[in-house]
Image (cartoon, rainbow over all chains, first blue to last red; front, side):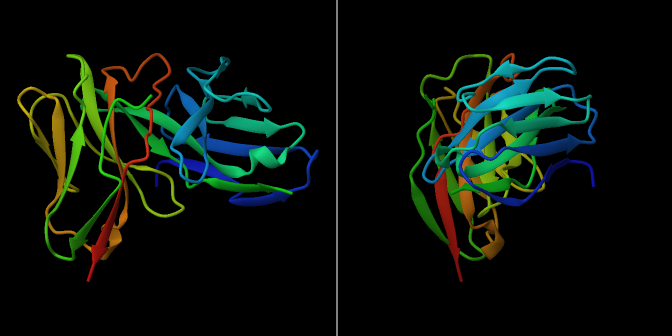
Length: 114
Length: 113
C-alpha cells in the first residue's frame, strides 16, 4: 500500500546516545515533515522539507538534525539524546486531494530516553 | 495557536450517528476545514475536508454552516473502531508554505456497545 513508512517503531536510548529515525514515502510527494507528540499535547512540527535538497526548521527544532536524502527519504537525527526528547515521532507527507493539501502520516516511532 | 474549539470528549452508542462539533469563528475566506482522527498510538488519519459546501465520502460527512464559523463531522453509524481523538483544523488552500497543520487537543470520541 502507498504511504509513509517509519523505522524503528520503538527505541530506548540512554542520555547522550545518538540515533536516526528513518522515514520513506512512496507517493512521489515533494514535501515531508517530522512531528513529535507528547502526552496531552497536539503534534508539534520539528523540521520540514519542501523539496529534495531543502530543509527548514519548524516549531521545536532544537536538539535535532534532518537530512532529505532523496525525494523518498527524510531522516531525523538526535545527536545527543536527552530525556526531554522522550516522545512519539511521526513523519508525514502532504498530497493533493480535491485541491487541498492532505497529510499522510506514518505509524510513529516511540522513543524513550533514560 | 489552534484556530478551532472542540469539546474535549463525547460518547456515542454503537450503531448511532456521532456528531462532532467544531467552532472556527475566525476562519478566513481561503481556509479549508480539515478533519483528522488518531486511533490510540497510531498516526493521524485524514477523514475529510471542505471549504463551504457540505461534503461526504466513504468515511464521514462534513456539514459547514453558511457563515463558515462552525462545522460538524458526522459518522453515520459509529462502530467501536471509531473510538479515537478527532481533530478539526483550519488551514489555507495550500496548507501554508510548509503544509503544516496545527493540531489542537481534539475531541476524544468513545463509542460504547
